[in-house]
Image (tube, rainbow, N blue to C red; front, side, top):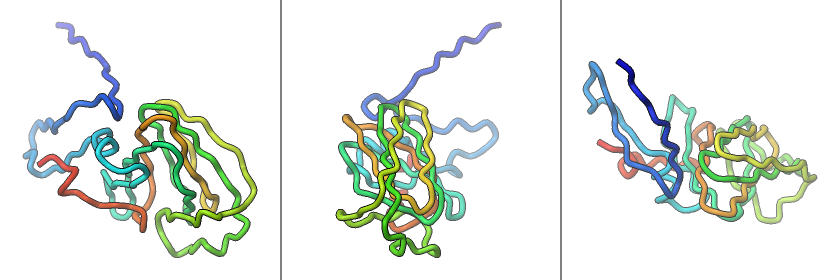
Length: 166
């Protein structure tokens, strides 16, 4: 008996609502959200928490146009889930704006200055490091989905009742 599987890739503009398939569990014990749907239905660069383990988060982000500059006192990671996204890096001139005791990313003022460190071009499935104490911003020519691994902070938005299937 042969089973044939077909891989289907989703995107911000072509996704299907999923569900939870449990073998010996009660599905009511699980919360489930769709990374692409969350990105499609929220404002650009809102960091919507879609998974959480203690203070660690996975955040769904709609990349569209250019973002503000962000910085974080710890490393973060970003994955392009569907379309091309650029990540620009900046070594801050003034690191005193970074609070080492503060978790999560925060926006920097629009007049942020420093030395350009380069950029990375992400395609579907590519991951980039968002290094601690270095500013970063995103640019996408079309609406795209980003997945960011971080720690819960002031930019993280928890809206479980709105994003989870029950």
